[in-house]
Image (cartoon, rainbow, N blue to C red; front, side, top):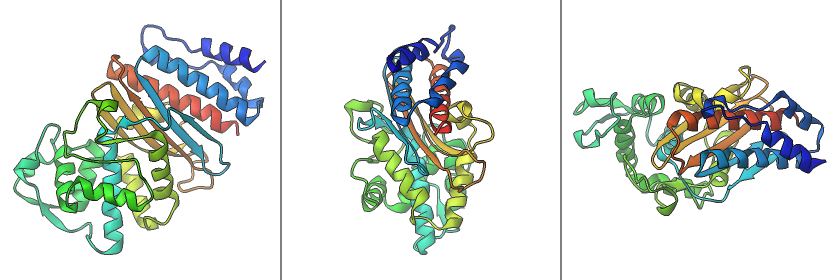
Length: 307
């Protein structure tokens, strides 16, 4: 019975010319009455079908922190982060502000050497001083690379960020370079993580005592300030869900998304769903990759909504 249902639902994933038309049929709700193990198996099969259609690799790790229901797909494989690391850098700077070692209102000078491609916010301010808080907002809202490079300088370089992640118990995630980073993906371990490692970091930073309540609220506001996430996981979940996410985009065929969801619509509510979703190596267009992320969001929403 389960094998038949998996095959049936897999065939209901439709591609009509582009991944933007990828969808799950309402019949997927039939899986709601299955036990958790069976629903996870169906979800993995659907992720496998998306991966086959896209080419490349799909890596997903997700958990409902209230019930403990979890899913991993290529969870232990390395994926390049691209701009996903920027939310970790922001979290570290908020932590520094909480401890008083580096207040957000500290002003720093933007070096001309920090200005690289995709630095539209910082470029006009090269040679002038702005606050760490402003740089964090630019980095998170527009993914400004000049802001990221300036902030990496502020903390002492990429290795300092990696060292902080190690102090949180992460032995996998690594940020090795300034922007722009390497684009070789899984064949180059620099600037990479795994879905499982990123999920563990996300849970520790959001659910633990790493940040003060006020800093978590600030981080969420920064995550919600970017419009890019609206085309990825966020596009596949119910509109009533409150969400914050950080995307990463680039070569080779990368369209990542790390998100936190509150299905009950209450920020920091009792039911929290964490998702890390990585796409890498596909030759499809960015629009198709983002549509695939939206479909992953819908698939996971069905999984967790039924539990």
